[in-house]
Image 1 (spheres, helix red, strand yellow):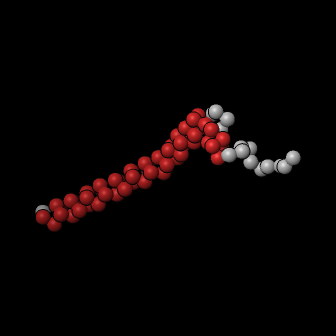
Image 2 (image 1 turned 90 degrees about the vertical axis):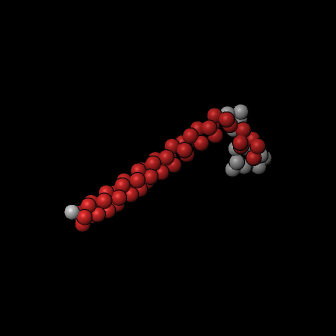
Length: 67
């Protein structure tokens, strides 16, 4: 008897996860999506905020010089 470090005999069995593959891979996908959103959304919000501040400062500088 050979000792195998793998729990599955083939890649197809690995993907099927003993007939639980859909649930397992769906959970992995949802988790990955949430983790990516946790990084992307604050980054996008910061970028939007900085752009708004740049526009506000330019507007204020333009109005001060025109007065």
